[in-house]
Length: 111
Length: 121
Image (cartoon, rainbow over all chains, first blue to last red; front, side, top):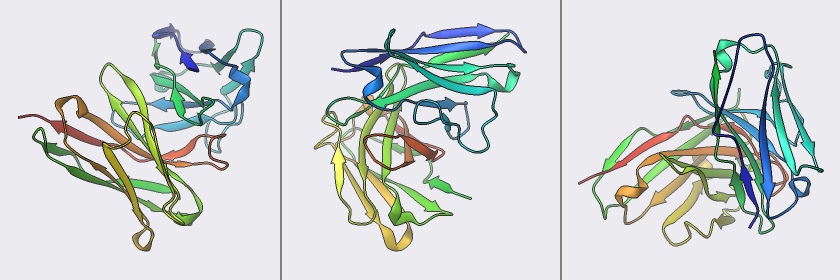
């Protein structure tokens, strides 16, 4: 079964760049699009990246996404970190049976 | 403005059932599938199923088939998630989301605020 694995947590200082990885196993990360969602306590989740690297309107261009087939992973890159970026981030894709799957989530701490 | 507004928090006893709702506004409700996702402490996010509001075509995650029912009333732009024979392990937050087309390729673009379900005796 295709699975997505994320680091449990990452931390960085304001103004810096952080990269959150999402590594696929049991299949190719490039087979389906990857999405990234932001989960802040007390707020509705927000889609930050869709279709690997597309940014919804309203999402700052500090957020970007990429896919690396050689490492079978997707990445969410957040540049110019702000304290408001502190949240949980989840990657999401689909397996070969058209089941929606999620990574385990990464807690981003802005130091 | 696209919005998905879910019903409020619920408390149930083990063995009871529950139906939560998700009302869409700001777009043509029938044009986008709705997904239901569960967040349980310690288990991350779990996809439960999806429904096409235009014809009620429904697909369930194997993990939840038989335990939940997803339905829709397009006359009131609302999707529903019915949970049956609740267990304490069903305690968590349930989210609805709107799926970008095509389904099985892209993901969710808008989310509800979540409904906290607590199952306790």
